[in-house]
Length: 115
Image 1 (tube, rainbow, N blue to C red):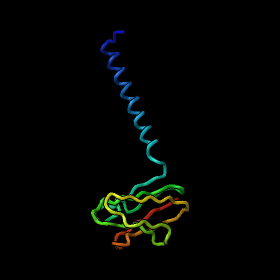
Image 2 (cartoon, rainbow, N blue to C red; image 1 turned 180 degrees about the vertical axis):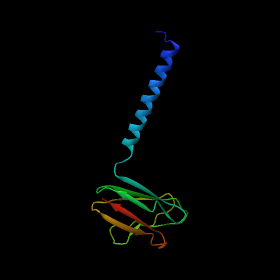
Image 3 (cartoon, rainbow, N blue to C red; image 1 turned 135 degrees about the horizontal axis):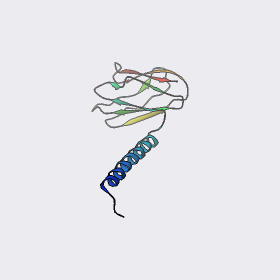
Image 4 (cartoon, one colour; image 1 turned 90 degrees about the vertical axis):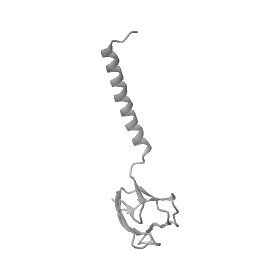
């Protein structure tokens, strides 16, 4: 079958559109709903405040060359010392506002809100 230039252009555009939609759907499937990520970088939690639904989780990843911890001030969760590129994930089962710090560097503070 021989395609005219117009048909070839339309076919390419349709393919690009549907391929783009497929990638978007695949990207949604890969990321867990209700999950948030916090990077530990330059002796700071980034972002300093995240929100997740009940049953959602937060993953912290240390990008610093120094160890850090993720420790709630109410004792709900506590990571061990996270070396560079280590990660810690906690799943939140109750609504509330959870403040946390790095116990090694207590000036590092942030919040998770669970709704």
